[in-house]
Image (cartoon, rainbow, N blue to C red; front, side):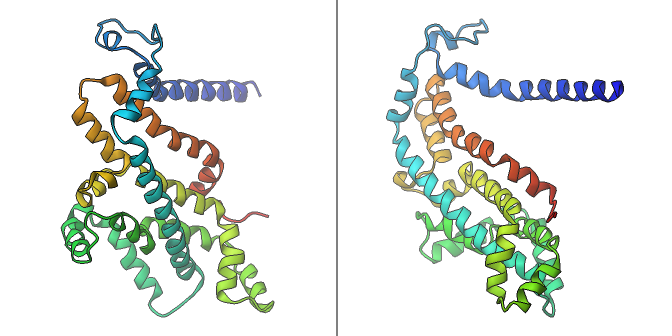
Length: 276
């Protein structure tokens, strides 16, 4: 009993130390965002600004069309999450529970696409989107999500769906439930942990994506947050307080989203399946 308590205490201490270490960059960003320029350039290590300059946040969102970038980012992220959840969940359901000739081969081919780095398909995809008229349009950032958002999302959901007992599906068939009804009324409700995980991965990846907007967007009115921050840095490269304030405002939605969805996220990653 004593050894167990000591081990648990050490585990908590290690976790607390790790949390503090990971939080240091975020806390330093917060501290820098509230400083005046002369406090940033000093050689002394100052954590608590004196005086606290809240004006930096107002300046950060007015020097550039921050809220326009925010609106574009929210639109792209939400549409991408919806598209990925729809396409990936239906594909995963088909691979997990609907047996068809050649389905295993198709799944292996799907997984093999994960070995292709994005640099290999970057130019062909760009040429395709340009021929479709999607260059300098948010369609290039949202429509591909309705193809599943990548093999990893389908793989994760498929593994989770395979953990759902077939007896539940067979009982639903006996009660006259169609394949679509099984998907909508059984697979999706039971798959909430995995769906939440995929949604978080997709939202965070889309929110922080810099390469795709850089390639496909030319009009500044279509910029996302990641590209807008780079544009902000090019204009105010030495105004670190404003840059940290804008970066902190950009990071807050991700932190809040993960805070509220962490329980489902952890369950989804662990792939616990159905219990009880």
